[in-house]
Image (cartoon, rainbow, N blue to C red; front, side):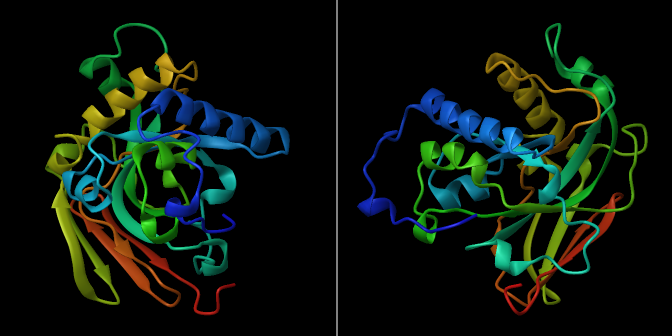
Length: 248
């Protein structure tokens, strides 16, 4: 991400309510990235937790696109220099084993489409100074996506229930956020169902193999350079993100 704009000094080209236009901007930017060689790996759902909605002053979920270069799970450190004003959220990551294209996309169909799931840390970011955003700002800015880290324990839905997950998030060993799966639209699978229907409505349905980040299970927290974030999700286990100290 590059450049922080002050929302108060920007021409309000999108306004604050035209979400369709904001998604059109997101899609235009996505098409440009793909044309330049970027590879889409999935989607992220945002603004699913009442705590996060309250933090940002919005009242509905949104979604963004995940690209391969956003997955920093294999790196020893999260490169702080790639971020502007990052914050971390603990989430459930789903991997799809079937397309979500045809049919009603109801609860049973969505559940059946999930191959497995793991713990995840989404590192959200914003080009808008001080996160002074509206729903159209975050949608146009790819759902305020930054980077993400996936845990290494993948379970099927026969092995755990996403709504029953208990989450504790630590920054430098201090507990800074906690929540449960029910904080994510009542159930992370409900969030996935919302995304499946909404993405299809916008002409880009969810496909087999995609990674889907569920949305936050609790409040997001700032992650300045040098921070070590650890999320503990019951059953799914831990996932850690160590942010580089030198903005590299």
